Length: 484
Image 1: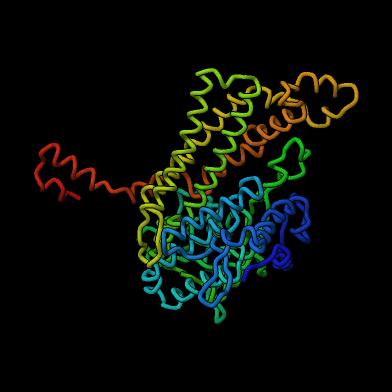
Image 2: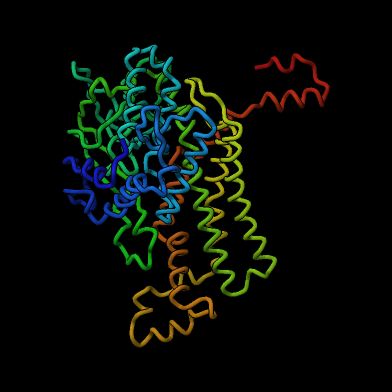
């Protein structure tokens, strides 16, 4: 079924324990820190019910039942084109960039689906659980997120040699399921339906079994779960001055599991280090695609504010400025090329799905994430110093100074003071604000840290092809290829 925005809102009014700024939140759908982003997610649900978006956002199965394309397990190249069009449609409608809305996290369960043989080593019922949960998230149109990062503690020590709660772990088994304790950080958890909780790679040594190697589906309103959120950006300053932070702040949460019962039907693996290692190694096999696609839209916004700013004052005619704009364009189009090529050369997965070309996808992710800070700085330079010195919107309305600001911020017949103020405020929030700094750090670590990004490239790049070409070119003997 396709949910409406109101049905989504009702689904998260489940008595969950949410805290922000030291306050217990009674309803995340109306609390000022959460309402804007909840409304954005609700809008996505409502879009699927509008005729103009139906063909792009939905498909119908053989029974005529309607489902979202975003959570459909991919088996063809067209599925990936459809998913890309879904994200394009959503982001253009909301006129902004959001990361955690479900389509980019459900793919992590598809990665575990590819590891069913590994799960079967533990118990075939766990393989059945992941198959059922993939279907459930898709068929019930759930807002699905993932919980990855633990507080960690002292990583030079084994988990067992410090406070055991630093990494989420199994406490005990019961007839009804397993009991877990610990904590995870997750964006959007406080207003999502469920999370795929999996382990951070721990210092297991040669252990085949570990209480820290556990993966499961957690209902975000389950008893014993506490959501302790970072302070929000929404409402700190007027929306006219910070239009992005006030609408698109995706609140991050420390999700505390205080002896939480996970029913057996929600357990995907536990105490099995090989399964945990497998899922960490393949976690972003699918989810990296929509994640990188969002950075493509950040590149578009940086290009947009930069071009508008230089055209206002005629600086776009200067070669040095054109070269900097070309650098931004190269950044954007290189991301686009990786996404396009990853679909064009998509590969069958071990589980029978179709995954984007892994080498191209992961190298595209490295390019998008590592170059982002430099591209933001380049966009700042093109926007000029006024993004950090322009007065706020209240000043532009204040008697006694309004006329002066109108005088100095009106550029020409095309750009009034009001439009210029809006552009500079938007550029400031995109590039210079507290929220902008938060965003660049988030993009850097949202899909694991940079060393893990490069590790994924190393594991998926075909070094053999380059070596074989070099072997022939250099006239090396065949035996050099046998060295492992």
